[in-house]
Length: 294
View (cartoon, rainbow, N blue to C red):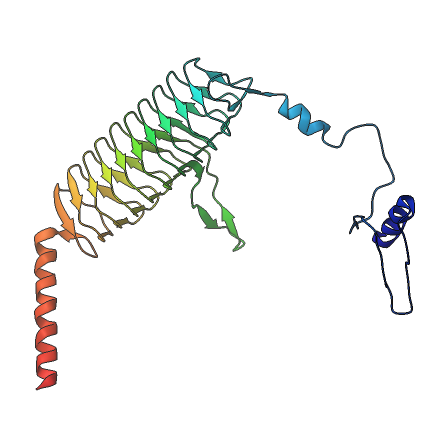
């Protein structure tokens, strides 16, 4: 089919010099495009992108910044939507909000007043409070990790139907991911998240918390107020952490922490116990190698 189209185009242009030789194509001085699939014969007057154009007509250019918004979205006149950003249907954008280029605000998302987003942020199935700072590449509201095995032994995806809720005065660092779940994820007021986080579904984080780089929180974790997680801290699922707990970097929480204080190690324990263990391991290691040399 592609060969016939090529020959036909060449004949029309008058530049078809020699088509075949005993060795196949010898010369073909033709400017043509070979099509690798059959072309349909049922041509009609309807443009193939008519449906897409109808959808595009639902979106309009925002006057402040040049981004696009759906006509059913509710956007405060003082909001700024930069070029390349898109606000989808039934979303609400508050006063003095700044939405960076490439950001996608999904359907029915709410963004509170004076919140600022970086570039390429994705909001879906979530609500964002007032005076928040969302840095570049953050994704909020996508499905969490939820699967179960049914009676037939088949792995089935657990429905993730609720929203992630981010409170007021929350700062979320670049490339962080916050999932929604079958329950909700909630960040209270004045929580600060730094870089590269993974926060699972059904997580609840209290006010005044600070989460540093590469922290990983599994599903259904509950954290109190003013909790601090050092870099690369990991927390297993269904764990409760009391208020005013501080976890050293690289710690791993495997069970509930019910008392305020400093913790560290794997599994996480009171910091003074962890330090004693570190010293003991070093002493044992030194003695072992000393006896081995002698």
